[in-house]
Image 1 (cartoon, one colour):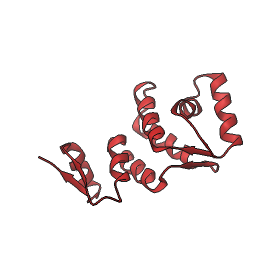
Image 2 (tube, rainbow, N blue to C red; image 1 turned 30 degrees about the horizontal axis):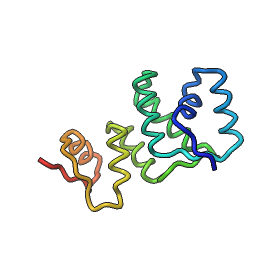
Image 3 (tube, rainbow, N blue to C red; image 1 turned 180 degrees about the vertical axis):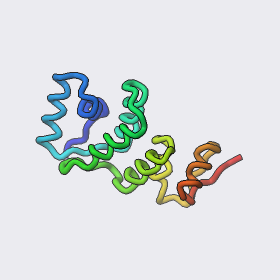
Amino acid sequence: MLAVDTNVVVRYLARDDARQTSRADELFRAKPILILKSVLLETEWVLRFSYGFDRELIAKALRGLAGLPNVGVEEPTAVGRALDWFADGMDFADALHLASSAGADQFATFDRKLAKIAQNLGSGNLLLLS
């Protein structure tokens, strides 16, 4: 299995550099690929800020990528939950952090906006600090 960097994932999704896109396509066709959570986090940020992709397009692209037959993602259950929450309005970084904390008793934050969204989406393990 081959873990890939954010720039490989971005080339594969954004298709903005013919040579690098071709190389990324070759890798995704030829090898089992592992995408780390940190790469997904950075990819969302790059697609949003550098490419102007909206939430819906980013969620669709990341889900499509994770659904490819030869692609695995680190902690797929947490990533799936984070993508659901992201699609429902939570910041992707917050969603990924919160979803990845499922093994902990609670996830503590000072972020009131995160706490409100998490409560509305049914995440019960968030501790809002004052």
